[in-house]
Image (cartoon, rainbow, N blue to C red):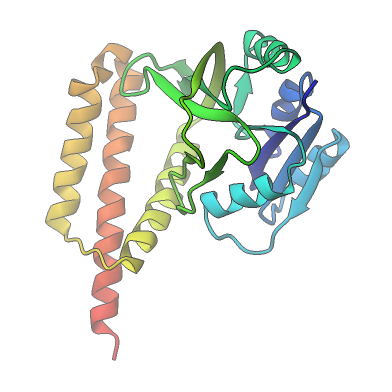
Length: 257
């Protein structure tokens, strides 16, 4: 049976890393955790559960960090999972059965089902969320994007689709929502500023309005009730702060002597 490495990147995930590791122990031959200088008990919990933990002193972005984890994997196959994700029992059994046979592809898409502050979101743009997470090592790598990284295939191959679900507990409360809006908007603005992009307060407002309408109306967020409304508002906030921070970076640069 081919070996499987599970890779996880972390930063202050003590409340979630234990359940995450336990959820993949049924099919993982090794669990690789790359931690970005957590100040809580993330590293200790991961090591106590048998994970191979590597710590880094600097943060270079999600893509680079995930590639570091990938470079440490020794299994023939790799399953990438985030600390706030859990494979369903069906998915665990399906991956185990797949690797016990002869896989028909070198990479597999998995449907992700996401929660927002305690509610399963069925619309709002989160429906039909299929992500590439299981692949044969050497056939894919992560982009080096600091945020919103993705897997890129290194050779022509059509991904197959697994039936099992990956549950994504994206936000437990609105403090986490605000924290992520702040962190991700800063990373995005810095990345775009380094590429020479410009923004303005009017662009920030237009992108915020567009994001709200797209989430709440075009992607049927109103069908998710009050949580759908809250999600549309937080998406608008994220868009606003991305572009207003990009504008401010350009303003600061223009004022420098």
